[in-house]
Image (cartoon, rainbow, N blue to C red):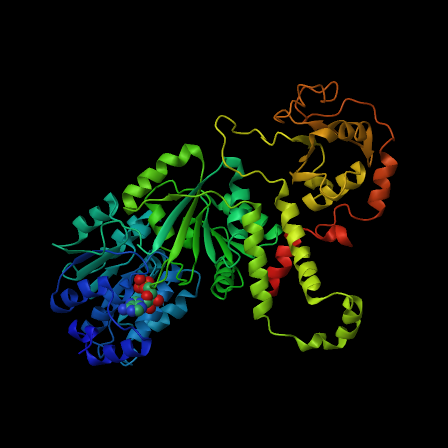
Length: 598
Ligand code: AMP
């Protein structure tokens, strides 16, 4: 007798279990199934997503329902469309050998008439999102007055999403004597209220300890200045080339912004939030499931019900407002017996939240240092070596080989390897050469603390057609400072920042004295916060009191115009990402190119 048999499950379910390849019941299944099969009782089960809770209520439900009767006998409410579809699919798998049993999914964003038709044909189990279910009831497209079982799945999530009113309204259409099974990862006040109000003496089952995050998830935090969040995120991604992750932001706006920046920087990323249409969300989820997207940037609400088993990392770009939400986030990784890592990018002011979360998850966080440039180079080069090792040879290149071989004929294998890897290494090391360690420095919230370099403000930005690549090229050409002479280029909408070594400050300021472009003064100043004494040392240009954001006061001249004109004629200005020759090689495009090949 196998362990599932011992729980009291019937032969058709046992056969389906065998087909699905489940070897033994999970903890929540062991605890709930015998009770739900034996007793007509209400139940509150505290269990995370990924613990096998769908089967914990699904197996007993299928066994107890009469497949010969066509009327609706069970209603399962779940917070999202994704979860709703996932539960329905699981139920279909479990009832594979019960062909007359029809679970039907009812959710927004799809044809309500089609769903009503399916119910009319006979749906013993309806799996619904609260909003659409309310719609169905209002339009009298469904009858739940005779249900015997009601499952509230991810009750805490449904309440978080503001479904309290819908749930109570739906329950008012169901018979009092039904059994209600409530599943929740956490037990906030609101869930306890529902249990008290709508359930009779529920049996309580807890998997692990209450509110515990999955134990196969390790928790790490990285302390940075708030302004370095994005740079920190990039490092975490660069240090984990095989990352497959959900990145959580607090707002839709931040979610969109972070995703856009990642895409611009060449990562395979996409945003998932409530401002996208259902179609767009479906497309994003499909690409994520099929791993065309490595980094899914999501809001808490949109990420609910994401059921992807192999997520390697959850990254908290910002911590959630409610610390309880952290368990939902971290529960997206470490599913189905796998291990996962939940990373938090945290600023000093949020550190106390880490302590509160530790109390909730009953696990401690490891404080980690962000990987530095060397670490990242090492990881990326090794990753590249493995990629090469595992790449199948594409014989379409055979016809080009004679020419290629001719070019490279003088080099030994060792030299070729060194050269090939130098291409990649130089890009990474140049990129990270001037990057600081991003560790927060007390009292220095917004100060650029690289003592050897000077930061400048410049009054051109994205509106003038620049991105960081084209601006960096422009500056390098205008200043003749060599390949790595200009760094930390940060292009905003109508202005930008960049750095040079301190020794170049006079050269920079002189070069941009009376520099004009398309009839407009180009204005460059040392920033207020530059820490090298530049601001004190009189490097700011005369007449500016506003720190660089106002209009220029000097008369326009043509000193710089002709040089800029030459540059403009080369066509680099405003051509995002399209650059030719060696100047076009940069770390960000290199990442993009390699990612897109996957
Ligand atoms: P859930 O917590 O219901 O979202 O389940 C998480 C994943 O575990 C799903 O892919 C299930 O198919 C799978 N699963 C559920 N029960 C078992 C089991 N006893 N053995 C192996 N996998 C399971």
